Image (tube, each protein chain N blue to C red):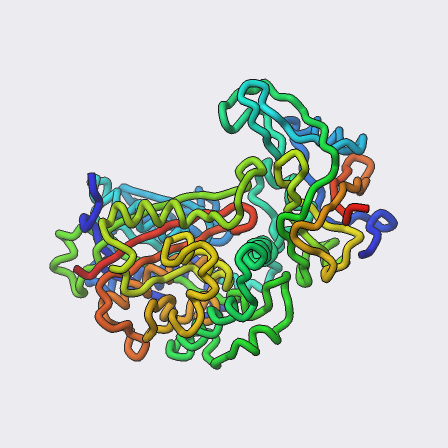
Amino acid sequence: MADQKEKKYLKPLPVIDEEMRPWWEALQRHELYVQKCRDCGDLRYHPRAQCTNCLSPRTEWVRCSGRGKVYTFTATYQNQGAGFRESLPYIMAWVELEEGVKILTNLVECRPEEAKIGMPVEVVYEDVTPQVTLAKFRPAR
Amino acid sequence: MSLSRKACLAGVYEHPTRFAPDKSMFQIAAESIRGALDDCGLTIKDVDGLAMAGIGMSGMGIMGFCDYMNLNPNYVDSTSIGGSSFVAHTAHAAAAIAAGLCEVCVVAFGSTIASYRGPMGASGGGGDSCDQFEIPFGPTTVGAYAMVAQRHMHEYGTTPEQLAEVAVTMRLHGSMNPVAKYRNPITVEDVLASRVISSPLHLLDCCIISDGGGALVITSAERARNLKKNPVYILGTGEAVRHAARGQRDFLDIAAAQSGKLAFERAGVRHADIDMAMIYDSFTITVVSTLENLGFCKPGEGGAFVSGGRLRFDGEFPINTDGGGLSSNHPMMRGMFLVIEATKQLRAECGPRQVKDCKIALVHGTGGSLGLRHSGATLILSNQ
């Protein structure tokens, strides 16, 4: 897979809003978090300001181990979107984190034929711009 | 209050175009409305309700169409939940008519997505705060469904051959529909030999891209009695949404489980009563997953269920007799055509592809992406 860091970053960047900014700032420090409700204990990803179970705004940020398993994936061979057409095929996946929630991501350092559901993976942080770091996953070492 | 048999489909029209670089979206919708009104013998002056969705049409876009058509409806519905929108519009129109909000509601659609020739399906997201967690990773429409297919194969042992059976049957039906875009028969081997777009889905596991449009005229059972065609009654409806569920979703549980249950309960019919179904076939996996979630077979049995010709017009459980989105047409949104073909089947207007003794039909539309977030809308219709 092409190393995008060497070139101009062409893929769409997240439009980060203030509600989500702390999560993105943690990624810049190479830390991955999910959230847990301080009132009912419900776990959630992606982040949001209140619990979807009880609407409580009292939130604990839970630091993730960065380990998980592939829940499902697809190797994409056709996408005309800028940045993606240059990096075909790429793997998109839902990874189930050890903490118990699923995160949409890319599998990297992994050929399509090597990807398997249930495969243990670990987080890698891609600093794609000075403002944005993405959490991707590779086969666990 | 039960809606059952309060409202009915009085007129339907499927625009025959599959490629219309010479037309606008609104023109295709307007031509379709003319066709649907002619079908039932009403005129534009009778229309007091309008429901609409379209590619790139915002919720406010319906006002532009009112302007274009010089319509001043008493009831408007611009529910926009993807390809299933028109199925939901039909349910809402039935409720609006039963409640006296309007008497003659037109549901309309026009699309020139194929002749526009722009890139599509490279998901740009919904423009909301969920996007930032998805668009950096390259979600495509095909990819989002492919992730559900991959999981289905893993949990249940569903095979690429079983998925391909869906495409093969839809093409058989397409070959019997003179306006279908693709009419050349295909085999399971053809599907498996077509290139992989997003694993495990091949090109021929994916719906086609066409222009097109259509319209429905929905009115009260009373008013429909004296119109040109036999009314098709709306017995039951349901709608639902599924999403990532704060990271805790089982992706094989889809909206159809909720909307289908509601529609069956409200219609007061059983699965065995359904003579044919129109099941949104954006991709082959959509059909397998939808049939399981609607309860026509058990979870995990969808692959076997769609095999052996069961889904053929002359099979045990006929679906998508027009050729579906996999062969007939798919102008980005297909719910409209599901309602039209079911209505024609219930009126016994389908010629060589007519399902015998068709009295009760089920329609299920899926909108959005199964592997990210999606909607489901179910209708149960009858000619009695």
